[in-house]
Image (cartoon, rainbow, N blue to C red; front, side, top):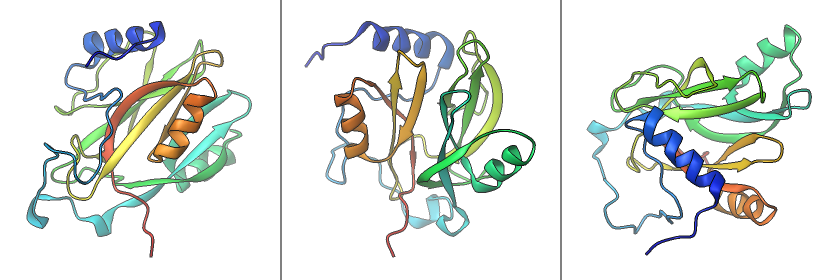
Length: 194
């Protein structure tokens, strides 16, 4: 089934194709525990979930940009003059390379002050035009496995801001407010409910 695509999504997809190589981006796909084709792994082929850390979503009023990062990074950045406001706990991932994970790289565009995130299955950071590599911010799964959930991306084209979430409700509400669905950038562990 063909889905109608906005021009911003087409540009995003073309950039992904030319610059991102082996990045998995899923557009308009509902992924759940009963989805056929979702790879399941045994516990001896999953990264150790006890080593996963909480990643937080933050917003900078001066940059009008969202990022995801560990709390310690926000604390350090704010100490040296940044104005990040932590908005919510976002997901669980690993701060260091783990067996069976891939790096999730952050990139910054100094012209638009936007941040984008790109997972690389071969571990080599891609080079998207106009963006500078910030570095690997997390280690994630490249496919839905080991109890992971999709990390969705939405884009606000007027402000030039990308936002990441694991919540389908939050993603859908932002899309209803005019944000553009930019697919799935990676797979992460959900926040603990206990």
